[in-house]
Length: 202
Image 1 (cartoon, one colour):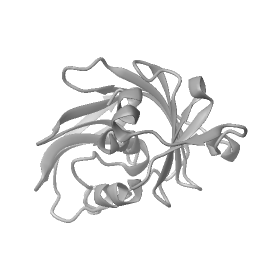
Image 2 (cartoon, helix red, strand yellow):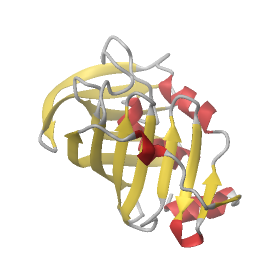
Image 3 (cartoon, helix red, strand yellow):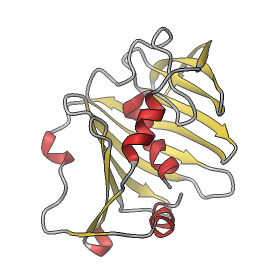
Image 4 (spheres, helix red, strand yellow):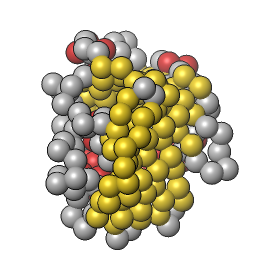
């Protein structure tokens, strides 16, 4: 389930969950501006999911709302600075904290041992990006990233399976800080990891 949550971080981290980005290959590990987009997440044997993702550069906050798929209506809030994560479930009028994500984000950001090979230029969702082959000890994948550090597409695989993330729409636009706070009046609850993973479709 935590690996599935890492899939959302590709917009904010400019990496795929199976390897970090070498600083020499890509100038930034985080986008240098506010951005919003619609992304499709695909995993073999599972129905595709579509998420509306927004990122605020000043606070390093990422908000992902499921708009199609098993998790429709669920919101994930990631604080990439602290590593905290919360899942907002409107159907239950509840907020679920996801512990231990900070360690996962640190692993994603760690570029040690990663090897990046440029594969040329591409255009995805109307934006230019550089394609890379990503090789790392525990997995490999590809990524297509803009000059500003926004991931437009990423694939990855390891011994636990594979995943791909593709931008369907992307736009540079200021993101209001108030849109990245937890809703008031919601109950804080705990869910077993398996139940949370099922809720997210991961």
